[in-house]
Amino acid sequence: MSTPIKVIVWGEFRHEKTDPKVAAIYPDGIHEAIGSFLRRESDLEVSTAWLDQPEHGLTADRLDQTDVLVWWGHMAHGEVRDEIVQRIKIRVLEGMGLIVLHSGHYAKIFKALLGTTCSLKWRESGDKERLWTVNPSHPIASGLGDFFEIPAEEMYGEPFGIPAPDELIFISWFSGGEVFRSGVTWQRGHGRIFYFRPGHETYPTYHQVEVQRVITNAVRWARATVRIPDACPNFPALEKLPPV
Image (cartoon, rainbow, N blue to C red; front, side, top):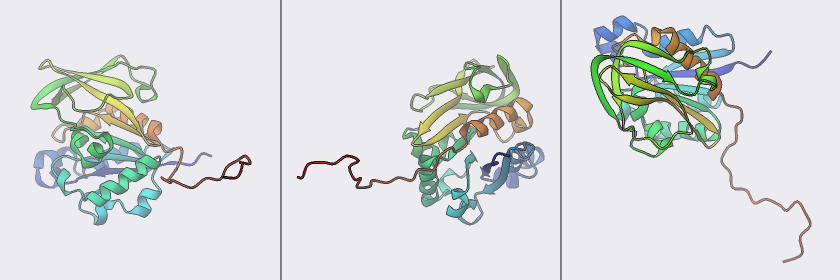
């Protein structure tokens, strides 16, 4: 039997406590809504963490045991402690997978790993979003058709201030006319990163089966396969060298 993929789903857990509309959609938090459908998968071992826990729920010991970190943030990016961001960054460079969702495009960890502004255009007006699968053979697109639609979502529009992605999997079109690179991947160090656009807190996006399929596929794709800490050792020669 293979070893389960160990996943932490992280969320701010702030909107759900202050906005009745969000609480009605995600009564246990967005992190728990995501965690609940991931827990249905027998090959995943899923736990959750949130901002107001000690060390944001991301202690060094816990991250050491993590294969994939799923990240949702929005209203409190600035409250995430820099030393925790650095801790996560090191783990990604060592091989841990990172999945960043929706407004996590402005998260400190996403910016730290990509090195760009990660800015974009936005509008909250209930646009229909059509996500086109432009890389249908990619594992993250497994089980999806040519496209799927989300009836109402927040709009994100180009230009998206990211470095050129390694892979482009989904492009979104919105009923207001905009398009957006909504499913993209990068490799940083030994770790895989996937950014997935949908998921504004005032819409039931994470209850939609296609969105759940994308995130589940992404967890399996991003799983850590190595753990290689940074080092700069003095290395002895494999062959006999002449004296200096």
